[in-house]
Image (cartoon, rainbow over all chains, first blue to last red; front, side, top):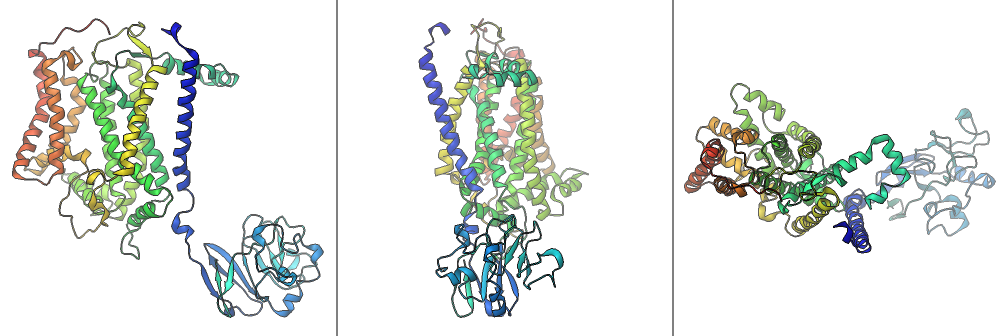
Length: 199
Length: 407
């Protein structure tokens, strides 16, 4: 029986059947892996509205948007002046490194500095760009309030407790931090003088 | 392809540490299979395919399913809502769920054909009694898994089906109450029941895999039966072909045909007119209202008819238990030396009638009971047992035909 086997014909059939099987197997993997992606209701998670006038000057509020924490701060004029003068010490002064740290409305050098639509109110994703912890808010300058947890030339901002990343009051990452990028900004707009719609 | 793979250095490395080559040779490339196996011999491979699919789809469904009877704001329950979420919001969730739900019916269909083949060709007879007995254990575990799984969507049929079956065990004298409470975790089917059924529904398929392994191991020890039911010299190339590639290719072809049918049902008719997924199960469970007509899914209806055929509750339960238990002793009831029904004219008639009988039992169990159907069910129940008892006397009166020398 085996003497009469046409091997080239048989090998062709092996490759054809095996190839078709591999394609079918690959196609069958799509629904299984696809099912593990976020479901439609998760993707449709609602936008979040927030009235920023409830945040008093100097205060930080953490709200939840799509299950993620979001920082909203009300920066005083004095705090805004502290955004200047340490440009040399920032990894990405103008938030240009990646898509996630900039927005279309950042169309002037001023807005690139404050990273906000209304200069007072900074709205950013509260996840350290290193490994996702929520940084601690340490707004006052110097070590008076924070001891040696912050550098001696501390300008005020955020300190991530996990691996020691530092951000200034515009959530721009300071040199020497393990975090690669500024805190991300998410789409938002003012739908009235004081209410923001996030998402 | 397999041969060239086995010549690689990597394979040699693995082989030295596992004896893989010896296993592949003894189980695949040099494992002999009778040359005359017909298409009825492909259902074991198909059943294994369905088992794997059930496990894989089940694992992915469990990523979204939530076993809780807690009420939700919508007025349903967490479990019911999570199933509906799988159907509507989860990517391909409908496909996974329908594949799983239809898979249950397909699994039983295939296994019933597989068992019918074993009965017809005498595959349960010496020396394959243990293979048959392990197969019956597999059937019982499948029934358990199907029963546990059916509660999970927490619909009306889920709830009342589980209520009926747990009460069934509750009717066992003395221990009934205890068993009922062990199953339900309370005094009626409720949240604790749902949680433990989910746990057991996940456990049982793992048991199945282990027992299927034993089933196949025993088969490979005594080798396959064949349509003539005769003993074959396994080393004679006139009798046998090698399992790989001859039988593997045949099985693969059968599996792909089967998958076409299976997927056709999944895509175009997953409810199968209420036979595969009962319509009432889209109504959320309500412990204050029983549906108008309640029947088990088709694959359990033959036993349900046996249960209903007796007017004394306990006798009905005992008869249903006996109808399953008798399968264990089936190999020992039939003492005929001839295996295949091809050479046993009387057995052939009896076993074909038995297949029809089981279908009649199934029909009676699925339909709302009437006077006529009740009598039909009782006659069918009588024959179900008469078939097995008759086997005890059959060898004395049956004239078997001469067996062929070889294949």
